Image (cartoon, rainbow, N blue to C red; front, side):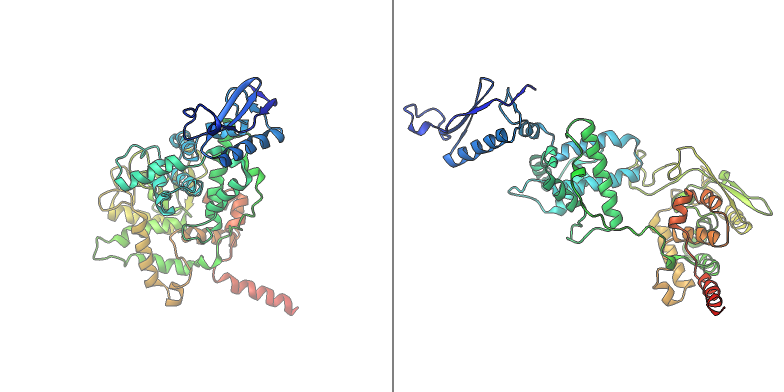
Length: 462
């Protein structure tokens, strides 16, 4: 592209006063200018429109912006005209990220870009509802696997409108436009503010996509660097109210065995699954992938689990296999990395009893659905909710105490730390770095506060 600062403008041309009435019929008012001897013109239906356009071009020249000699346009305007739309560039970004991304990452990336794309459209006639725009972006336009699917007439109308009216990516070089997009990311469809974790996750996705745009020279610099927006504070520590003490956990694990006794023992089948979450501090997705060949289960003493796979629920649309559950390595670890966790005799006994009573699947997995698949999160959540109602007092059921199966992991890690297990050892068993461990999990469990209060009370009495 050849550019110049030498631009000359002519007065507005008025073909209405010309003898040649056939020229520029319907658009008689012309804006004319010259760049390096090359003439350019644009024609408008009213003189006011022509004057406005001439003023825009002259303003760009006064501000020292270079003009493209070939097209005659200011370089900023030319880049905007030639820019991909936000939706088009988001599609190219997802095409690049999709093959190596985990299913959960695919889901969160599409969700973040759909949120931003919903707010970054022209305010044009026939604009669909925000919920319809976001749904169409999420389910049709953004995922590489769904762009060619058959659509209903209503969905096709939304898609066509979006393709026409998604704003150019280059518009984000304007600070106001960038701030509007960040405001959209920070707001839910109902107009309320999004949770701090949701906003930061979506902002990170948008930041990475725009970094890719800078890398591809679609943007001159990163537009987020120009916007100062206070991010909402995140609560990163575990709420101590969710952490159950050992006696409460034992009651909960016993209660699980009473759930669904008339329905294929669905509770009893999952008792060892929940126990793995507590005694081995395993994430639920890690427990779902556990195989008998991953377990060292001696008849006496401590055993060992080799955790090396995770089966998070993501949805068929997001996995390469078309299954609901993705097949991944451990969180924040290499694909084939294994975490060895020593397990106490109580868990060894539960796992041995589970294998003896329920057997294993063809691939050796310990915990399966009735058809042999991966146990769904909705299934084990229902079992856990019912077990809480059996094991806990009504006031505790209404409280956050052990509300989710994941809270068993919090209980285990908090227990180890508060009983003096060295932080590096706890971090290794839990699959965390030491700094994250101490920042997130170092909480006293219920019952320890009494002992601590007694120590403090005695200190004040001295």
